[in-house]
Amino acid sequence: MAGAALVSLVFAGCGTDDVDLTGAYEITSNVASSPCGADQPVANGPAFLVFRKEKFLSAEYFVFDRCADAAGTDCSNTGSLFSGLFEPIDGGWQGVATSSSHSGTRCLLGYSDETAKLAGSALVVEHSEYVFDGDLAEAECTTDEADRRGTTMDCDEHERIEATRR
Image (cartoon, rainbow, N blue to C red):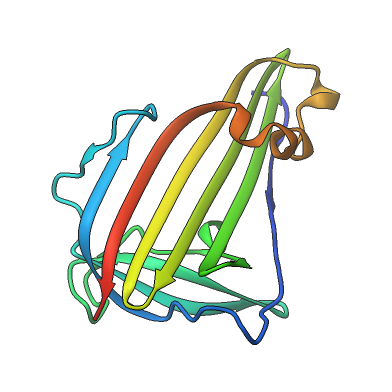
C-alpha cells in the first residue's frame, strides 16, 4: 500500500487544579457498541481500571490499564503514549488522537476521543472512534483534516465505563 500513516496527539500542560486520576477503580458498568448506537454490556470485561501518571518530554499525562485485580498485576490493554489522556478538562482529563493514511484515491481518516471524569469516588470513562474511508486527494488526507472533521465522521466504536475508586 502506497502512502504513509500519520498520527497526531494533543499535549497540554499540567496545572494546579487538575484532577489526579492516579489509582485503582472497580468497574461497576461497562457497555460498548461497534458501530456506535446500541451499547450493550461487555462480556468478560476487566474488573478494574488502574490509572498512572506518565511523562513525555515535559508533558504529564494519564494512562490506564484494564486489570483483573486492583493491584494492577494482571492487566491487558495497557495504556501507552498513543492512548494517553493529555488535556485537563472540567472534572478530569481528555485524550484526542487523529490519524490519516492514503493510497491511490483512497483515504482513511481517524479521530479518537477519550475522557475520564472523576466526581468524588465515581469515575466515568468514555471512548469513541470516528472514521472516514473514501475518496480524497492525497493533499487533503491529513491528520489536520481528521481533526477538522472530528465527530462528524461515522462513529465506529463507543465504550462507556463507570467505576468507583478503591
